[in-house]
Length: 114
Length: 113
Image: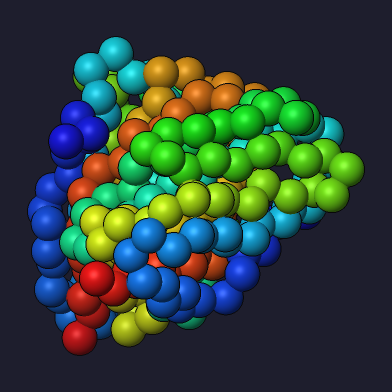
């Protein structure tokens, strides 16, 4: 158990819909990262928050947005869903934003868009 | 931009065989290098890391050495077990102050008894 929790574990929805994925980082970790894992794109960095502020952005679509709340949990919002958004979405946390810190990964949310 | 290239899988070995999974990277500056492992149905977990040139990371019998001259971080184990069957990801975190990880495509290892 990494100490990072993600809900829900599975999500099945239709094209055009909007969903919210939730992540609670390990106690004491200030940095939250979101990654997308798909068969064709592999594991890709989406976005990072550090202590409530956006720190870095990857290849995140404009239809996707995220935020980190004062209690440090984070939500990833995906809207106008397309079939190609079906993937495993991981949240990870680390104590700081330094490049040498280990990231602890949650179990992931599997999103299926029908 | 920064990138990581791993050897293609799947890799199938018999128990107690030697393992090498090649990983090379392209990055500016001095990245930190990681190997993560993903067991079926689970999230990723850190296997080992190295944060500067010539560092050797090791854990659970696995080793990898940060070679700046060849921009490589190959994963090795002298004797694999069935329980090592998993997907292995090489990753780097660049020298910027974000810590975001850039992953290789992953290598599936299957160890047969």
